[in-house]
Image: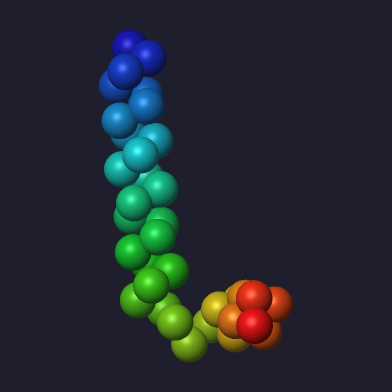
Length: 37
């Protein structure tokens, strides 16, 4: 049960990171760039 929850959590994070990478023109991405630079 716990292992399955962990796997689904990792998959969810992976999908979110892919969405974030595909939508690089979002204001949050630019704010992230300005903060890190």
